[in-house]
Amino acid sequence: MSEMVKVAVDAMGGDNAPGEIVKGAVEAANENEHVKVFLVGAEPLIREELKKYSYKPEQVETINATEVIETAEPPVMAIRKKKDSSIVKAMQMVKSGECDAFVSAGSTGAALVGGQVIVGRLKGVERPPLAPLIPTEKGAALLIDCGANVDARPSHLVQFAKMGSVYMESVMKIKNPKVAIVNIGAEEEKGNALVKETFPLLKNCPDINFIGSIEARDIPAGYADVIVCEAFVGNVILKLYEGVGGTLIKMVKAGMMTSLRSKIGALLVKPALKETLKAFDLEQYGGAPLLGLKGLVVKTHGSSKAIEIKNSVLQCVTFKEQKINDKIKEKITLRDE
Image 1 (cartoon, one colour):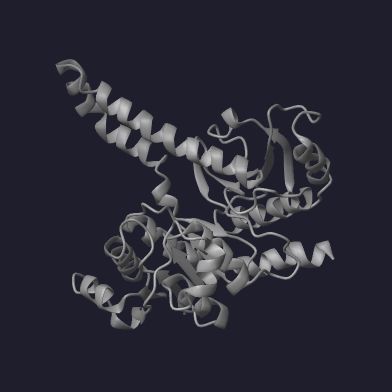
Image 2 (cartoon, rainbow, N blue to C red):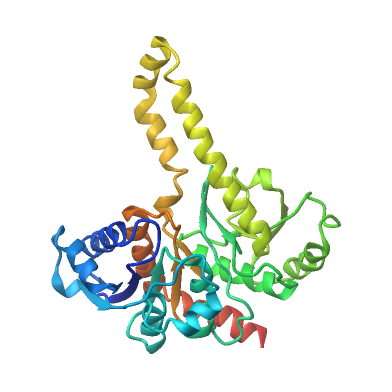
């Protein structure tokens, strides 16, 4: 029998809280009998939302929190001052071992700061990276880092590559995942100072499958499974991905409505097109894990709907069952000492 995986969910975080957050958490519990969710936030509001759904009471619990950390608040100050906020209270549950993981669609800054200050880093991990899965022609790839460490050092990027390899091999079941560093050309001598200094370190790293540089245009083609960069570059890639994807879908839909012939054609291709576009829907992959912490922290989009919350909670189950932290410790702590 599988061990129950306990996930604390920030019920007050994001544009669609608490409605979509509660819905997604309940759907996750109903889909997997080995997960228990703790909905942390304004208890009266959460309980009102829970009345809409059927679920096993032993799999869903509410934890009252009287404060909310808003997106615009300075994260360090908010974490220090708002001790009874849904984010701080939920992260304390992870720190104490009461929960295995934390999921939030709320303040990214607070999630990143809280992850390091409250949950804490694994021994040997210099900087925890935020690592979302992004769609490619050949399946999902891990973009690491996309928002946690803007001023990263070469040693940080090497650790990102190692943690990303562990994640893709264990969670996504990709054997010997291909690792590439984001660059402005394929040649080893190209790039800024950070890339030039990091490249030979990755090249000489025996426990990753480093294939060299990758240009941004080659990322959607799926040439690499782990895409290594510092957070500024990663965040630009992620936001451009989201923007271009959304625009293309709108343009395709608009183009299919321009004439009677195109409308008839749209009806014929709709099933196949829907399946194809689903592969490029970021929501299906859940949130971005903050790797290298003593417990799992998963940050989802601020606009997350129930499906992304559900998938993020289920993502935590896989993370725990595959013992990702133990594998990261083995790869980072032991081999780097």
